[in-house]
Length: 220
Image (cartoon, rainbow, N blue to C red; front, side, top):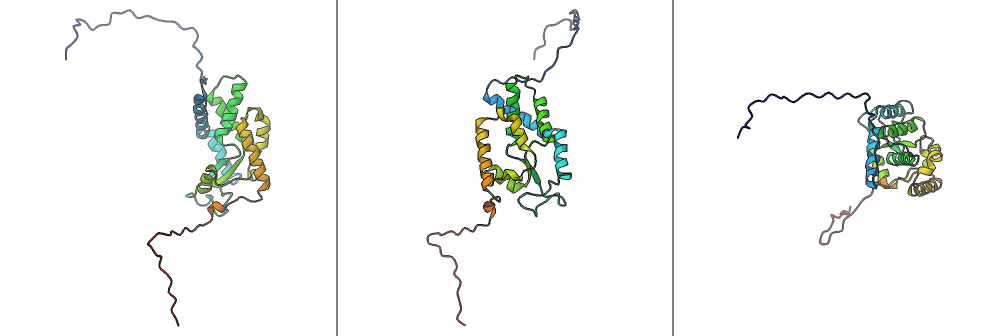
């Protein structure tokens, strides 16, 4: 390794002082360039909502005061006395992603500066105003709902989601509105939730060249 040929390492440059009379305003505003950016932003805001202290306190309120500790489909599954059981709060008829997308669309249409923290604050406030549809579910049922195996009748929900629809209708996409109409139609026709997907099913295999053991009846 070669050393640079420097006789003196002292910095003789003059120190320059710059005076700033007013600090520039820092902003968290986001610029959306395309649909990919929008989806990424929606997921970011969704994470902010879920991780916020206010949202966690609201969920705890639902468990403590509204008693959302019992699965709405299986009355014998509860985490009230058994903390090993997990009861999750499901958003319906709009997922949290849907809610975030709708609120973001409102901000875009009203030409507001896109601030993820303020949008997340509005979404949390909607929960506190009780205008978001919610229902407690055990993990198994929750997964089946998201996989489209179980339908939740809208009359079984907690929260005045109709009020949310009335306030934000013009910011809801046509696809979501069509899906919402279908959910209303099915809810009217469905007296009870269809739980047939959770019924026991027995599968018998017929394999060529293989015979199952047969019961031999002895003559008495």
